[in-house]
Structure formats: structure tokens, C-alpha cells
Image (cartoon, rainbow, N blue to C red; front, side, top):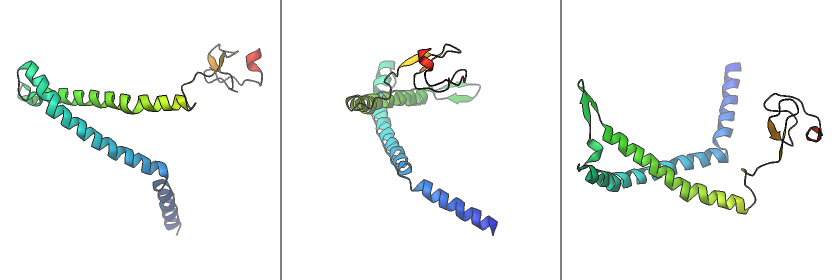
Length: 148
């Protein structure tokens, strides 16, 4: 019976995990990311690959390869993948990250805002004034440690 009870408990725990809102948000984000990547791959294959191929004199750049001791190395495919990664990163940065950071700053939710810091009395590492223990040397700090 203990095995059945443990399994039932684990099943309940898994159900609670799977039905959390952040698990659904993650699933939606992964699905949208895959769709977005497919669009970018199509743009790279349809626009950038022919452009790069025209520059280097090859019509289908993605199929460029060389052989070495009978092994085939398809470097054109690697270049296509790197171009895709670069474009995805640029688009995500300018379309998602920059606007969200601007919105967070406008709403006063900027997590990158610099908190007031002071040197730890024991090791002189700059730490947050609200700290009660130094993260560098683990010195326990009293209430007014920064006034010392």
C-alpha cells in the first residue's frame, strides 16, 4: 500500500505542477518560439541564403560543402543556422526585450536599478545596504553595519 500511496501522492504533486499558470505560460512560449523560429528560418532560406549565394557566386549557399578523407562537411548549412540565430536574437531584442524594458522603466519596475551599496566591514566587497550577511565572505552583519 505504501507504494500506491507514494505513487498517488506523486501523481497529485505532478498534477499541481502541470496545472500551474506558469507551466502553461512556458508551454505557450515554447510553441510561439518554435513558430517564430520557423518564420525566421523561412526568411533566411528565402532571402538571406540567395543573397549570400549571389555574393559568393553560388545559387544555393546552404548546400556548400567540402570533403576530407571521405567525410562531408556541410558548412553552408552551419552558416544558414548561424544567420538564423543572429536574426532571431536581433528581432527578439528589438521587438520584445527593448519594449518590455521601456515599459518596466515607465512603470517603475526596473529590476536593474542600482540599489545603494556599501563595502562589507570584513572583506570590503560592495554589497547591498539591506544585506544582513555578506555574500562574499558570509560575515553576519548587524543592523547598522553600513554606518561603521
